[in-house]
Length: 256
Image (cartoon, rainbow, N blue to C red; front, side):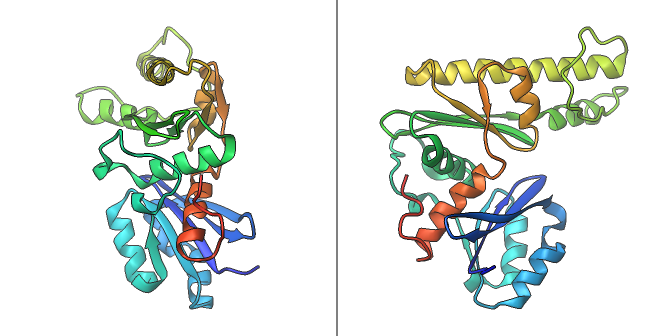
């Protein structure tokens, strides 16, 4: 398999990577961000062909710096807003939009068209919305289930950390652990549902499709009516679309 372009989506907890292979992605991998640079596969492909390029969406500056240091600045390009064609960003403050949210918008529009909402369920639960006029309208950011549980453990005297599970919560919780799981999970599901409804109302599209992606997406698809499970590599699809065009490896990539 040719490895002219490898795309990465570097999140706060996990990173994804894949090879751009023709019109799609191959060899999708998911690793902890903290061990990204030591991943055997990435080290092997990085060292086997000096012409391989890396196109990266990252929300972790420290990981970005390490990638550049290990792979070489000339081989690594980071997704930036100015690289995206076909979307109007005039209605938002573009200075602090995360690269993952940009990639989600590109990937979702290419996949299902407009309007579309993406709910990315990970360490943070983020959303982006693109309206029927192809305008990026912004979205929301809230803590994910793990982060809410960690906050309770770190900032209270007696409450323990409760691992995140995949089952829908049992309410009421009959002990402290059960009460934390019930409170966090019901709260997260309720927040996600309210966010989706508010975003739909905000663009005047009450039937706007919503793609749920990210490591915790399955939980929210089970618990919130109307969410569709997006592809595991949606964010990377967006990264690849932009990267292929920017690096001259695709005729149509990045145009949405």
